[in-house]
Image 1 (spheres, rainbow, N blue to C red):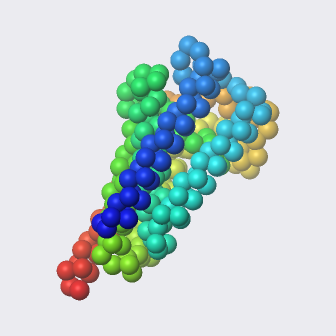
Image 2 (image 1 turned 60 degrees about the vertical axis):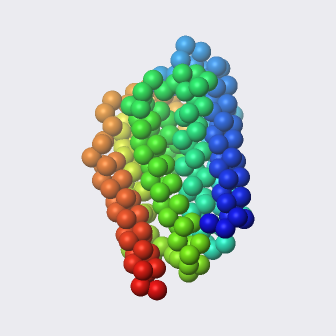
Length: 239
């Protein structure tokens, strides 16, 4: 990795860690307001303004991470690599700082709200961390191969596996929550929130995470990464 790329990599890491601290600070404030006795399910209802602000904050976070990837990368593939690297470092250090500030989570199997777009995602803390490490591996592979060959890209099969695996993992995060809501609301109503739905949703308590679904998605993602690495190693060997 040439000197300029090392500098980019170092500052991108610093930026992502700082974002993790910023994200955890917001959670500290929210838990002080809504969960003074400690976070747990069922959820405490938030005001409409706070709930909308949280969704907008998450959207803004994604925009920021995409933006630094676009700025840092030379090719579209490398931009994607820097984006997922930043995302993964941010996510991991989000939990690191929560542990330091709140001594939470209690364990890697502690339930957490992972995301709110387009509906609520829930799962054990270990699941986003596993995905983050997979993203780091893929990102480092992309950056390494791009340094040796600017034509490095993710092919259609690899994209198909990455997208399919991601969708399966998302399904595992939303499965139990969606199943709970479907007891009373239609699928269309779930994605058009109203006060009645919100009042019902806060009664949700996760019981059993669908590990088979998550692990299937995770294995599909890892397979895509393995194929990408193998294909590019073979290319460089035969070049």
